[in-house]
Length: 194
Image 1: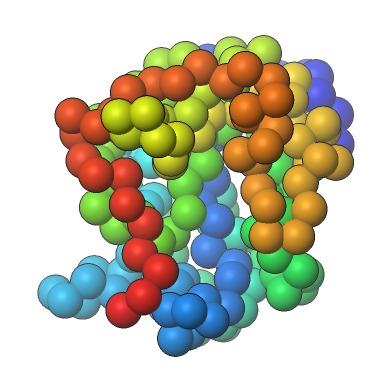
Image 2: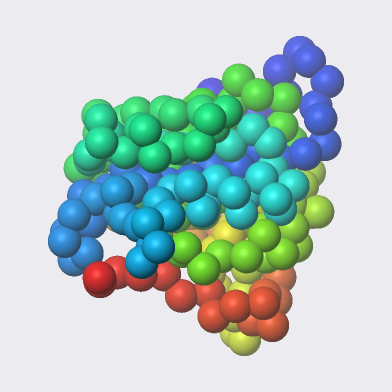
């Protein structure tokens, strides 16, 4: 994975990345298959929030339940499958960053699929900071959360640092990521149980 932009001119807009590959053991099944009470797939809500918040294109990383989840991904979103999903969120993160490396985006905004209440406004606050050297994390009254923004210049180092079920958080903390307050927009809570 190259930290430099591909030969085409960067668009200035970040790509979006939905991490939806896990088995959801505590949840009772893959969260990529989860739906709201009205039947709306969480993966579709995540893609919509990223697009409405200024991210294009959007990549969705699938693993557990990928065959069933693929039809739930909105048209135009890029599906990336990882066979290594059982290794934890780090494997999904690496697969997504590798896919993003072929794009001209200066940065990527990352969300897990289990944040169906995520508003596009929170994505926008991170997306407006898109730059190759940027690092930012949504903050909820002092607690870090999602989404996070990772500039292209950090993708290789983050991919190398992430292990097991530990994603970007230690890297963001170690490299002084900007905290972007989003507590006025929503709770920032993810859903670990049904």
